[in-house]
Amino acid sequence: MYAGKATGEGTVMQSFYELLYGTASELYDADAKKWVVGAAGFTDSLAFLKTLYDEKLAVSRRRPSTRMSGRKSSANGCRRARWRHRGRFLCALLLAEGRQLRMGRVRAGHRRYGVPHPERPGTRRRQHVRRLDPGGRGGDKNPDLAFEFLATALNKKNSLAFNIASSQIAVRKDVAADAGYQAANPFVKDVSELVAVTHYRPATADYPRISAAVQEATEAVITGAKSPEQAAADYDTAVKGIVGEAKTVAQ
Image 1 (tube, rainbow, N blue to C red):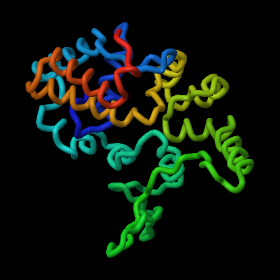
Image 2: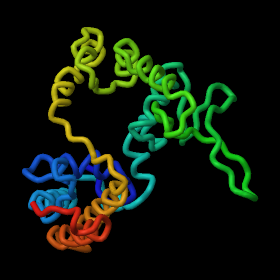
Image 3: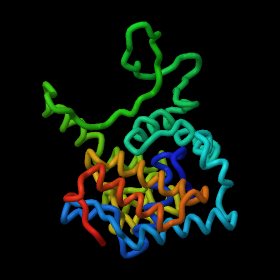
C-alpha cells in the first residue's frame, strides 16, 4: 500500500481512502458539503499504515519517499507514465492499436504522438502526451457536437470495447452484464458488483490541496515524524486553513 507524498494521488486513491472508507468515517460529507475533521477512522487508518511499515509488510520507507517508486511498482506502461483516470481513455486506444507508451511519450515506429505543452518565451517546444478529457469546456462553439461525441464514445458498444481492451471495471450495468465482458477477465465480474458501493473522491476545487494534506499525514506517520494522533490533528488544522472552519464538520 502506498504512503507519502512522492506517490501522489496513488497514496490516497490506492491506499488511504480504502482504509478510511472501511471504517465508519469518511473524507467528505456530501450531504452537508463539508470536509470531515476529527474522524476516528482517519486516525485508525494512519495507525494501520504505521503498523504496516513498522513491521516491514509494505515496501521500504525509502521507496515511498522517491518519485520513481510509482514507476517501479508496476510494469504497466500507463502507470509508469503516471497516467490518471481521465487519461486512460486515450491510453487504452493507443495500446489497442499496438503502440507503446514509454515514460510519458507514445511511440509508433519512429514517430511520436503527443500534444504540445504551452510554450513560454525562450523555451523550446516539447511534445508529451497530455490528459485529454472527453468533455466540453465553457464557451465551446459547438456544445451539441461535444455531447454527440460523448454519447457515441460512451455508448454500450464503445464502452464495452474500452473496458475489455484496458481491463477496466464497467460502470454501465449493460456492459457489466455482457457475457463478452465477463469472459474477458474472470476478475471483473465480482469486482463490478462493488461499483454500487464505490466512493468517489470529492469533485471540488479544494480537493487537490486536501489530498496533499492527506499525503503529508501518511508520510509523517510512516517516517516516524509524528504519531497517528498528531498527524491527524495536523491534518484537521490544515483542512480548516484550506476551506475555512465553517466548511468542516466534526465526525
